[in-house]
Image (cartoon, rainbow, N blue to C red; front, side, top):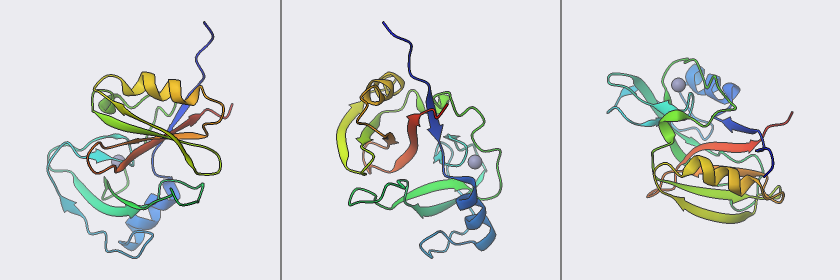
Length: 158
Ligand SMILES: [Zn+2]
C-alpha cells in the first residue's frame, strides 16, 4: 500500500477560452455563437454541468497537445462568457463522478495505450489506476456514446 499519486484535472486552457470569447470563433474558424441550451451539459471551462438558462458556446477543440494520429478534434461546450474556471485542480470534478465515461490513456508520444469503460462512481478510481502505469502520460475522461472529451488528467507536476 503506497501513497496515492497526486493528480491534476485539466479543463480547456484559459488562453484558448479567452480567444474563443473574444473572437466568437473556435481555433478551427467555426462560428461559436452564444446560445441558451438545456441544463446538464458538461462544461469544459469549469468542469461542472450547465444550469438552467446559462449561455454556452459549442466549439471544436483538440484536447491533446501531444500530437500524433490520436490527437483528434471534437465538439465541446464552454460557458459563453468568462467563468470562474476550475478552482480545485487536484480534485476529481464532483459533477463528473457519477457519470458513465470512457477513459483513454495516452503515452507521451500521443499513442493510445488503454481504454476503459467506467460505470457511474468508478471514474475517479480507474483514472488513478491508469495513471499508476508510468508509461501513461495522460488520461482523457470522455462521454460514452460520442467519445467527446470532458477533461484531461495528469500526474501533478510537483
Ligand atoms: Zn465555465
